[in-house]
Length: 182
Image (cartoon, rainbow, N blue to C red):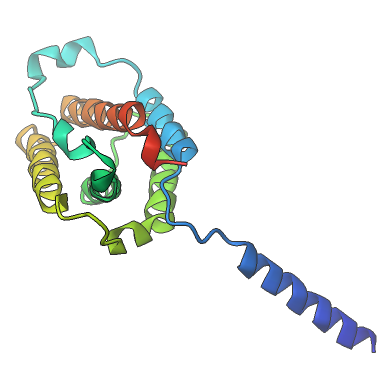
């Protein structure tokens, strides 16, 4: 009889855990803020020795802006695509060894978590007809970041340029998209 009760309790707790998982398809502001803080502080200020190598990379601001509520899904998808693109960019190359390893590891973990938790955003179809333009500008932006790393032979300064751009991107998303994140 006791074994039966234990099995019943285990089943109950298992179902309670599964049913309590979040079902909303959202981007979490707290996770994005933490990611921003980690990547910003992982390497400190932009190094003076890299100023000469710094390049101007056009920022796709329009990808994260909306004129009305009909474009919210497009912006959500752009933010999700940005997280995926950051992850892909960092996944394709060796980790920069000049940065704080603990912050770097936590940043990568949070990035993965945000991508996993909000994957359902890409299946939203409501009013996302403008996403193709957003996606195209993001693709060019991240290709430019990738090219910068390659052209500068994955140097310390190349990684600092990429980190600066990721910080700028996350900051813009946080500052201009309060209405799409929980």
